[in-house]
Length: 153
Length: 186
Image (tube, rainbow over the protein chains, first blue to last red):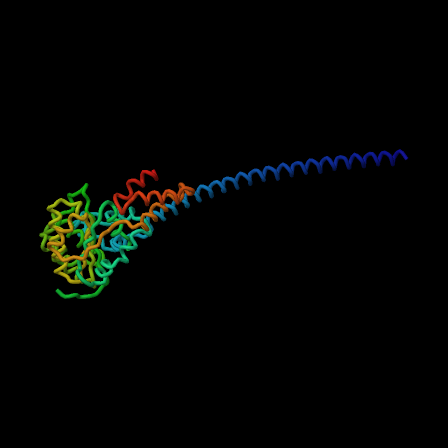
């Protein structure tokens, strides 16, 4: 009888040990999961912050592109890059005037969507179409003239 | 000179500035236009290379030679468009020279078209020497609305309509458009 009771108590102790060990392991797993979760959260917020930063930048760029039409590279600038180095030297000797910058600085002043009426006007279309005099004189006050002629193209 | 090939449009422009008049005399203007057309053609005429070698990289040669080169370049395009912006920004001497150039352009090559912009007071001077079509340039209500809407839309969405209306009421036609508005926009 005593032997049975002894065995029972040993068995109980053994089970208690096992439970403690399982508890310990569970706790450890919980901590690991929590730590891992924390790291993951940090990473995610860092990524979110960067995305936010980028979106603000992108929005800003889009806004800028809407108001200044600086996407298209000037026609001449592209062609100039294709020329031979010796030819470029001759052209730079011929004229020191930076015509590309001259055009770009005016074009930056122009707002997309403005001045369309000018291209549709009768005098401009006749002039462009080679009808009537080949000289078109445009006059106006203030700062409105230049952007009208500096349309990209 | 005959039109050798029809390569579409040639485009040359010159925007005059009142704050830097050193490089906008007839010589600089013609040389810049020639440079622009040559870039579009992609090849240099032997005469230009000869002048370059003769001048030993000093000052670009005699004006008439450069002007002749400009005309022969222009003839290689089906049509060449020349744009002069802001004649009133030049000295009166430069103005006379540019108008004279315009006359030469228009008679040297019938397919050459010249567009010139200026303050209205030079209208008479221009019409005396060269038959021209004239067009007044002023910002239309539509242009003003586009400008105001674009600049203000993000900043003051609720006030947008009110601001546009009151500005349009105040601006009659067009005068130094951006100055009062830039003050608003900051």
